[in-house]
Length: 174
Image (cartoon, rainbow, N blue to C red):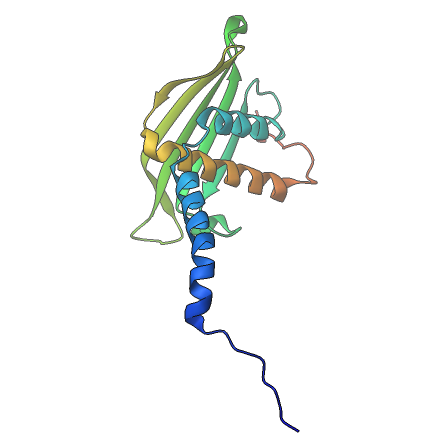
């Protein structure tokens, strides 16, 4: 009785069949990489997420402090982000100010980090849409930066989930 082995395909016979698939995937990734980020959409999502955080008592604005970088531990993050959202007087919409600072370790104590190289973004939300009033980050870095900020805001919101309203600072007056 003779054993019959199934025919084996050589690697060179498989490659031409996979070539069109590789080309389609490569072309798709190039198109996706060239698509500009939706800056107004990212700004709107950031605003909505920050407005969903609890306010400090007695403040007529919303603020949030966040950190950019990997992991949950803020001590290892590379950038600090401050966001302030306030309704404009006269019903002109909402103004949002975002300040991003690089954190540099102190020479005397590496646990202490100082904010350096602050970049500011100021925008207005109105019925007509989103208007950028001032932007220190250039257009090339703005989309990526806003994506990172949105991720930091959502991550912090998840960490704060289940906590009650923020406690205001305690001042003791004589």
